[in-house]
Length: 191
Ligand SMILES: [Zn+2]
Image 1 (spheres, rainbow, N blue to C red):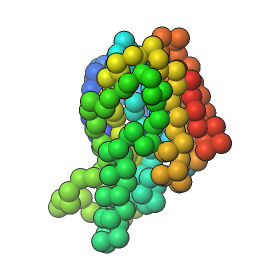
Image 2: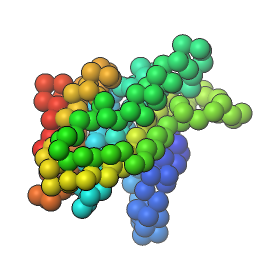
Image 3: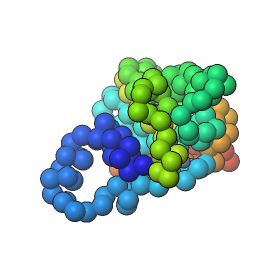
Image 4: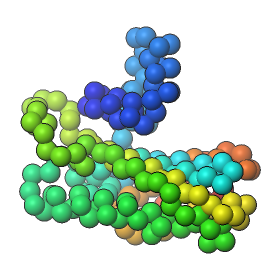
């Protein structure tokens, strides 16, 4: 599993990982980071507003979004993956932003081993802990009136993906950085 997660980390944070690899020989960073061992039902969300650019990144166990984490082995599996993907491609329904801010989706990046086409050598190896897969979704919005962006509401996400119980959010905006623990009962975070 570590191999896979490191690959994900490379894909997402090339600069950071490169630096860590250069300076931390022999340390096992992957085991300490959020990617080391995920917890089903929990996910992480980063929200950063920098002038008019809003970036949102969701890192979730695939379990929360599709209900399984193994490589798809049936039509039903493929359908669930396609459904989750379709929903993730419509972040406006998952993340409600202050309407007055006029934020428009500019870029979407979805990453998961489950989204990759079947390839030889992708089979599970017995005895290896390969049964955990994550889905990472990154979005960039351009906001016409960023100062009107006061928060983000994830009610739509909790509704679309009931397997998601809690989300640890980190928000960075004009008021500094803050953390928030979000759930279906507390889906809103202030920026
Ligand atoms: Zn898992």
